[in-house]
Structures are given as C-alpha cells and as structure tokens.
Length: 405
Ligand SMILES: *Cc1c(COP(=O)(O)O)cnc(C)c1O
Image (cartoon, rainbow, N blue to C red; front, side, top):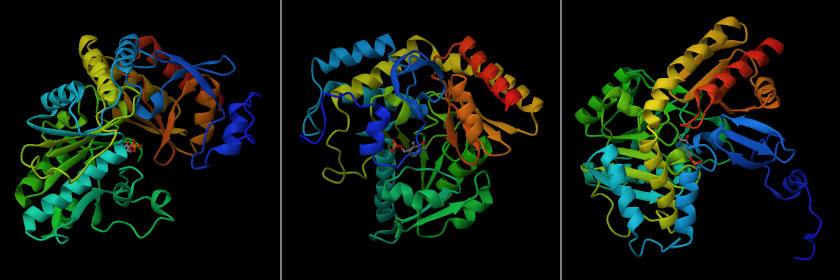
C-alpha cells in the first residue's frame, strides 16, 4: 500500500477525483462539521442545511440526545448479528408496531433493502394467493416513482437514468398514473399480488398521493386480495407532521418500508408487515447480517424519543403551513421562474420553470443546501426541529436568488 501517500494531507477534492467512483454528480463542497440545522465546510463557511442528507438527518446534526444515546451504546454493545436477540431491536420493533398497527418488523440497513424485502414479501403473498410459485408476481407501481437502486427496486423505478445499462430487469412491474385510480385498477389482473407506491413521491419531484387515491388503493387491494405496500422511506419518520405520510389519508397499509430519517443519520432500514402477511416470512427466508444492531436501534430509539419529547410532529405541522405559504408567495412573485410549490410538512418541492441546476448552485452559494429531484425540482428538506427563524431564512435566500438570477 506504499503507493498511497499517508503523510501528505491530500485535499478531499483530489481524493475524490482520484479514488471515489464517479457514480454521483457532486457539489464542490467538503462538509466537515454540523450542529443543528447548520453545517460547515472545510473553508469554515456555514450553510443552512435543508438537504438533511436527503431527508436523513431528521433531528439536524449532532443532536445532543442522539449523540449521547449512540455514544453510550457504542461503548456497551455494537453488533451481535441476528443469530441472537438484542434488547434495542425488540424495543424498536414494539415502538414501530405502536405507530403502524398490529404486525411485525424486519430490520435492514437502507431504503433499498427495505424495498427489496417488500418485493420479496409480495412474491410470498403471490404464492399463497395462487398456490404456485412464479405466477402471481405482478406489482402495480406508479410512474415517476422511486424505490431505490437494487434490482427489485430499480425494476420498480421506471426511469431511464436509473434502469439504463442494467437490463434485463426483474419482471412483473407495471406502472399506473399517480392519483388516477382507474389507471391502477386497469393494471390489476389475476396475477397481481401487490400495489407499491410512495405516499409522497420524493425523488420523482415531491408528488403527493391524494387522500382519495390512497383510500381508493386500499379498497382496490381489499377487493382483489392485494397487499398495499407503501414506501415511506423518504416521506415517513415524521417528515409530513404525522409519523407516516399515509396517515393523512386515514388508511392502513399491509406493509411499510422505512429508512432515511428513521435513525437520524445512522444507517437503518425497516419493514413493518401487518398481521395479515406477517407470517409469510419464515425462518431462513430472508435476512441481514447488520440489520437491527443494538447501535442502529439505539439511534432510532433516540430519534423516536426526541420526536416525542420535543413535540416535533406538532412542530412540523404548525411551522410548515406558514413556511409553505411564504414559499408560495415567492413563487407567485416569480411566475416565470417558479411554476409551483408542492408537498407537505417539511417535504417540499420547488418546481422551477427551467433548468434548476443554476438556482440550486446559487442557493448553495448564498448558504442554503437543498437537494435536486424530478425534473427541475428543488427539494427543501429541513430537519424536523428546524426553527421558525431558519425556515424564514430559507425563504429569504430563495427570494434573493430568484431576484438576482
Ligand atoms: C431513498 C429512497 C429509497 C432508497 O433508499 P437507500 O437508502 O438509498 O437505498 C427507496 N425509496 C424511496 C422512496 C427513497 O426515497
């Protein structure tokens, strides 16, 4: 390894240029420290972080209670595998069942893995439904949806940029128009096992399912014996002011994928499966070496504790309404530049009329970090505990950029 210089401090930019796979378009910023909603780069510049690591840092950066919980657990027990029990996994499963309804929970490490587990669950349901393997495998998904980069989720993500170069895909996925119940119903046949949608499409550009649509999907699933599988990887964990975004529609799912914000920055994925389907996975049928470690679960438990003790669901509900109204006012003042503000709670998309990349860069240069989505959408994903003042600053920076650009 002596070709790798260890004494000379090479800049992060040079290291990325030389050694990191080029699978991401990456902003020319090296972040070194975070506290609350603020992150600092290696030049000492502070940014208001409304990217939250793509909806992950739900309590902001380095929340003291999160840090204390993770430090304590790291010094006690980090990993034991799923060959043995650990108290945190059981407790986290209990808490998630309390939030989602009677059922059981499987733990993994990312949204992609959670979605793979949902897709495997749909296959098992198809076997139970049809009595044979490999026949009842059809899953109806939404156009413009996003279910991660693994083979199942990628096949459920009808986007050229995601699928190109990786065909053949996993068969069985068909795609309906979001919020068009007839479109979904027409795709259901005797070999359909499940419906899989995001309650609010995130990467696709912040496109919420209407409550009527979710209620309709629930009824369709009940009538046709399908599993309603909701991908809450991005819109869940409190981001919309309810723990799950589908709660706004007053429905229940048969299975839910969770990840991103659930452990506040620690890698985690989780799948809740309702009672009706929870016995489909039997010992040996699925697994994850790292899933549900004491450390990951301690991080998630800290997130749930802080959401509760700091009243963050009520905070998101209360503060998001005037914030989104203000963003709407900005949009109306620049009708040639901003077409629409979409979303709910702290999951908001600014639909630009033209190329959003220069605006995204200009926001960053003025100290506001955001995340791109869909076609020319700028995603605003403040941490759940962002203050009224921080929300107001994001609006002011957007206004400045639109005025100047
Ligand atoms: C981010 C995301 C995924 C993939 O999660 P990873 O942790 O990147 O694998 C899946 N579904 C949705 C809705 C997402 O937003």
